[in-house]
Image 1 (cartoon, rainbow, N blue to C red):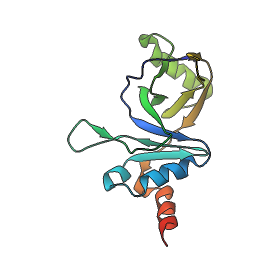
Image 2 (cartoon, rainbow, N blue to C red):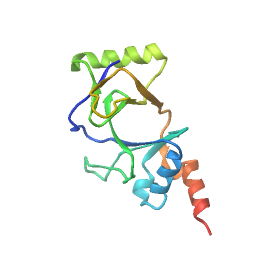
Image 3 (cartoon, rainbow, N blue to C red):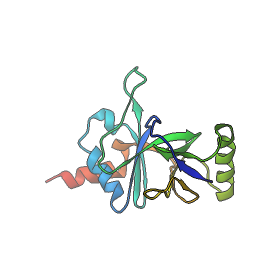
Image 4 (spheres, rainbow, N blue to C red):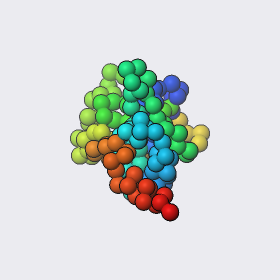
Length: 154
């Protein structure tokens, strides 16, 4: 697949935190938040963590916590997430077929977060990191929340 930078006009649907200690950084940002934010679905792996937006009441608005250093992501295809400001480098009608072909080629099924390797000044890339999202669950029910609560006790 090819990726390209684009205007960052997509609707944010989640936040991705990467690097050493990513899950701990997400947990630190979420642990003292309201019950509404702790109900947001999260998923994490080695050196990455993601939180997905959830609805606020009856409104169509969604809510996300503030997490310093996180990357906002959006749903680009059915179950496929990309960073805001990045898109598949292909015409819109071909994108669904390209997502399916990429999944078939690598034996990956969505949901997944794809982060193209676009360094400063580069607008196109063929390389990307892939983060598999299996079963996001509310933060309050995760091992991250339990561990953070235990760490916070005197």
